[in-house]
Image (cartoon, rainbow, N blue to C red; front, side, top):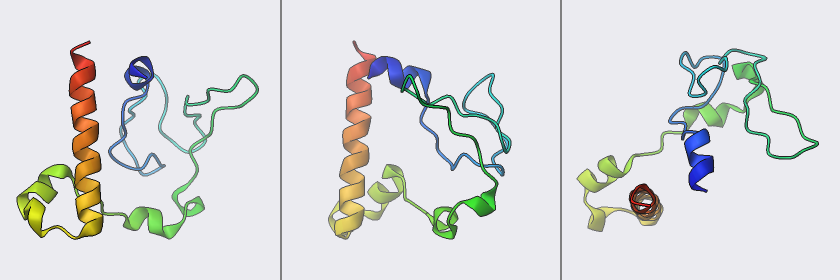
Length: 101
């Protein structure tokens, strides 16, 4: 897993035609460009589609970060926010532990 996470950095924003930067250095980030994430021998890398090819709800996602949730107060979070906070914290701890390996 450590090797895979080093090859494919975590994307903070949706990877679409409106995205100006490329997290995959050496690979384009415009419509029609392939994203090198295929892991099957017989599969193909998916391509970036125009924004209107994706569902509208994708662009409406506004997921809070762990910092925003922590500032809100862990005890005052609803169930959904609390679950997200603990998932993000768990991911952060795993990454910290993996950096020490």
